[in-house]
Amino acid sequence: MEARHSRMNNKYLADGKKLMQQGDYLQASEKYWGAAVQMIKVIAARRGMELGTHRSISEFMSMLDREHPEMNLWILYTRANNLHINFYEDHVPPEKVKEDSEAVKELIEKLQHIQ
Image (cartoon, rainbow, N blue to C red; front, top):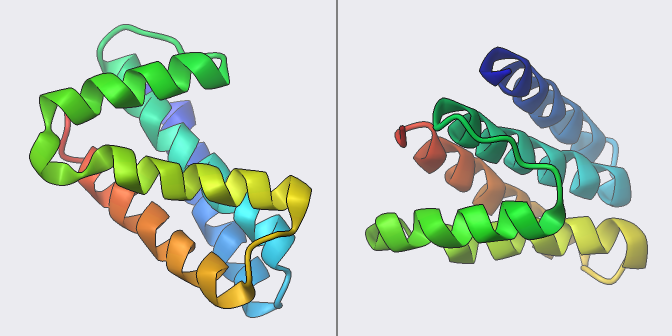
């Protein structure tokens, strides 16, 4: 399970980058959200857990944030979630989509160090 989520994370990151370059900020928003979620699921899988709902993902991230308050995981997660909302609402200006996608990359990098 962990390997599948890791593979999907990498795919969504690559897709998001390509879509950003093409100026498709809506689709890029969802790909970056997906990349974040897949990395969250990697950490959950390492702990023998499977996450399947937005609630379970948010609760798991809240727990990780309590475990690692110095990493500001919740703040980064909410920026990823903002991209997910943007996919449906188209409310985030392109420059902020770019900033939030960088926050997603930072979140993923930090999560890679958590067991």
